[in-house]
Every structure is written in C-alpha cells, then in structure tokens.
Length: 472
Image (cartoon, rainbow, N blue to C red):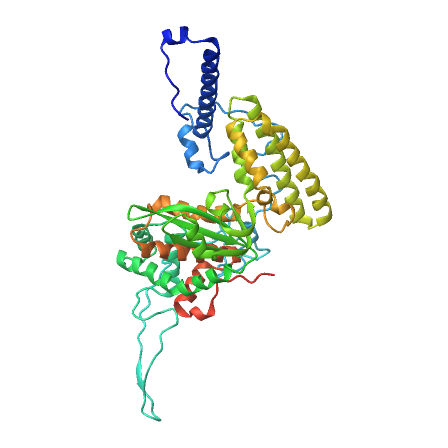
C-alpha cells in the first residue's frame, strides 16, 4: 500500500468539488485497508493454541496472575480425572510375578498367641524398585586348551556385552531412550545412573553411546526412507532446528506404522524432492505451505484442522460478516470430520458418498454467497477453497485418506519438545543422529515394539530387525 498524498488545507479549499470527492474516496479506501490490516494483526496477536499452531505453553503468557474464584462446573460437563464406571488397569495385575512372599501374622492382637490355622489368603501385587537396579558383572574369560587337538579357546562373552564397551546393549538402549524420548541431558543421565547404583560413569561414555546406537540404526533408517517413496500416501510437516546457532529444518514423514525424520538445510521444495523424489505418485497430506503447492504430485490433501484454525481466527475480528463466515465454515468443517469419523468406524461407503455429493454442493454455494461480501482475511481463505478444492476435499472421494495432517504433527511434537529442552544440536552429525534416533523411537511406538529392545538388537545383530511396518 502506497503512502497517501498529503494536502494542505488551502489546497483542499480551492480544489474543485469533483477532485475533492475523488480525494475523499481514496482516503476511505486507505482507511478501509488500514482498518482490515489492524483487525488482522489483532487476530494474530490474540491467537492461542486453540485456533492456531502455537504451542499450549504460549497461552500461559496471557493468563491473569490474579486468582479467580472457582466457578461451579457447568451442567453436563465432565469432571477432570477418571469417569464413573472407568475400569482401572493396574489393579488387574502386571501379567508376571518375579518373586512370591508369604506374609503370616506376627501375633494375635487379642491374646498374643502365635499358633495359626490358615483359613484364606489375600493377594496383592506391587511393583517395587529393587535396591540396585544395575548390577556390575565381572566376566572372567577362561583360556583353555583342548585335550584332544591342543587348540587354545576362550570362554565367550554374552551377546549383550559388545567389544570393549563398558555398558551392555540394553543399558545403552535405555540411555538413548532417556536422552531422545525422555529429553534428559547427559548430565541428568549420569545422575540417574548414580541413583541406580552406577557411581562412576563419564559424560563422554554417555555421548559415545548415543553416537554408537545412531550409527547402528543408520542402514535401517535409510531402508525405511526408500520404502516410503513407494507408499500410497504420506503426511509431511517440518519445524526449524538450530545447529550451532544456525537455523536448519527437521522434516517429518508419517503414515500408518512409521515416522521418518530427516534433517535439511532449508524448507524449500528441493528438500522435499530429495526425500520423496522429483515427483510422488501417492497422496501428499500437508498444510497449505507454498512448498507443497508447487510439488509434482497429482493428488494432495490439505489439513482441514489448519483450515479450521484460520476460520476460527475470523471470530475474533470486529466485522460481523467476517465472524459469520467463520461460524459457517467451522460448522461445515466439523461436519466433514464427523462424517469421516463415522466412515472409519463402520466403513459404509454408500451413505458416505451420498453425503459427500451434497456436502460439496453446500460448500460451493457458501463460497459463492459470501465471496462478494468478504474482507481481506476471509477472502483469501475462500479463494483458496475455490482454487484448490480438489486438495482441500480429496478425502470426500477417497475416505482412506485422512482429512487432516495430525499424524505428522503429533510425531513432530516430540522433536519440538526435544528442541526446546536441548536448544538444538552442536553439529550436523548430531542433528542427523537425532533425526535417526527419533525415527526409531516413533516408528517402534507406532508398531507396538520395545524401543530399548530395538536399540539392543541394532547393537548385537542389525540383520534381525527392520523398521518397515507389516501392513495388513
């Protein structure tokens, strides 16, 4: 927007009526643009985690520091905590017993007698922290000579004891899990090991363990990366990551049974092409960032959850028309989520497709009705819905594709939390290691595998493991 010209009072008084009207009209146009820009900035400033991609922690900055009297719970609103009739899990037992201990009375509280006849038993299972969870084992390998052929042989170490390493494979796997999933620093890991009975352990040993495990899974991560390129759909998202104070990017590729993280220098389309190829034959699920719009893929599904946040932001604007547009399209998006969720439960395609035909007509009609009445912010949203309708509503034709990008966002949340705790990486090698280790952690979680056991097997026998999910 150009700076409006300035007029002296005398010039305005001597100006013909026609020119003066033109000046007033232009001033009104500038005022309207300024008004809409201010309202847009207000909406951005007032955004929270509920109507944008901002993290919930940012909401705390706007909370009042004054105590508010506790408000009575609304009728019908669920209380915090377990609901009535909820069946607990722990009280069912732990599916194993490591030790049995029989407890007899020490004495009768009535007469002090100590002679008993057992008439029943009450069973109580309790998980305990044993006195020394970590034991130090000294293996003494015997050097022996065969009496038959004279050959000299040595006693073999257990598979978990690898080379000259001080920590066995399962313990190494646990430390890597603590550092990358539990977000514990090397110093805190050192302190935890001390609490568990391992007094002397250097920070260098813990750092080397992280690097060693990352090296052991590198081939499996690359195998997964190649496999993803041929999948029918993939959800993609990205987040910034600092490496020695320089902004890099961590990309997340997610789907059923897997999560792949890749470190990159930029957020550009070239990075996307290097990971998925110059073109992708499947369905690309993402937000509406420009990188994805220009990528060579025929089928896309934009995240409706992101779109809903944008329309929700309109509710905070002053103009009543903008607010009404927000409410109308939020209802339509919620309806779409509801019908897709119903299809996921019963897989009944006929009513789903019948609803989808009617739904498309109503969306198209709503856009036509409101396009002439909108302001700048809502106008951009409606233009996007009209221009890229096949990308926003692809799931209406193929319900096997989710209408959102939530799987990628949830997987990326772990990385964002780790970044906030550690502040980033000290080297590009450390960045790549983090991406590989997070890949294993989230993929094992998605497949119901033990993360620590996977790390253990990677150190012992990498050929026995795979990150590629077995899809049914």
